[in-house]
Length: 392
Image 1 (cartoon, rainbow, N blue to C red):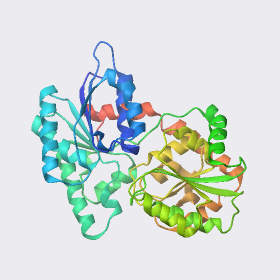
Image 2 (cartoon, rainbow, N blue to C red):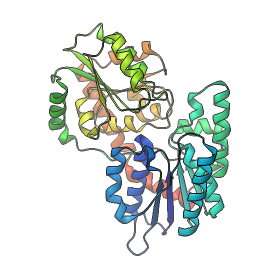
Image 3 (cartoon, rainbow, N blue to C red):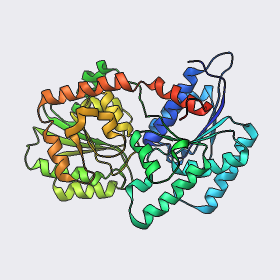
Image 4 (tube, rainbow, N blue to C red):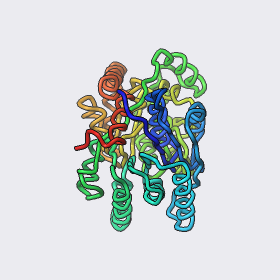
């Protein structure tokens, strides 16, 4: 698809995990759409304070083809530091602008970047929330987050939901009107499954696992949003029913709840049954090593870990958060459970004890991604949003 040249700024604070991956996927996809005669001028303005090793590694091949600015941003609300971030970002946007599009990702970049883009006179501001924090809170905290999300929505000309569920949540909670909302589902580049046998053998040897042992895995930040303690609770229940030779568990990731996770594992007597792998960069091998992937989050937008597991033809058990039913389709009806429910999560895992069932479910996931979620379709749809075409 041919598009007019654009000057585009991608602004992100949360450079770790799924949001960081999304921004680099978008940036790389825009580069592939570039026309030699009239190329896009792409600027990536990010804060590297929370950038993980995967983000930094994927960034390197992009650097020769884009302009990169390190704009210091804090995750927490800090008025003085946030004001400095607005000033620095406004200065950059004015110096290198005017920009046709400033695309801000997640709430902190939406607040800081939205104000800066308005002050710098950006022609179009696009905001992708990547999950509304208010969806995972209650009471006064929820009211506070809703108010902030509405401000972010007001600053943008267009808000992009990454799933139909996120679109419905934004409308129902009056974060932004439907006239200024678009849906552009997350998508991923499909991995090469021919590498699975070697990757699986290597990592299973490292972790001391027999090929016949069913490995149930969790991948993600160890934070309140992801609810990793629920996974430990379910693993403790299942460990009483299945011997270690039949089923074991792995939790991959790092974060502020790591001490709590380790303490819960010790209390449950799981230190010989659960691998705490921490942060890893060889994620293709991790997915190849798993037999079942579990998402146990309290809220999401459209989780990249589920997309990645599906791309690796792995069966998925997931909590009923935004984007899950849309991703899994009819194949996942019995494997989608209520957030926070150890009983439902445990019961869903029972559906995947049989190897043949797991293989069939995984193949259906892979085929669904190939048919409905090609990566370039996300880039084409975003370019339509950037240019204001095809809006309804």
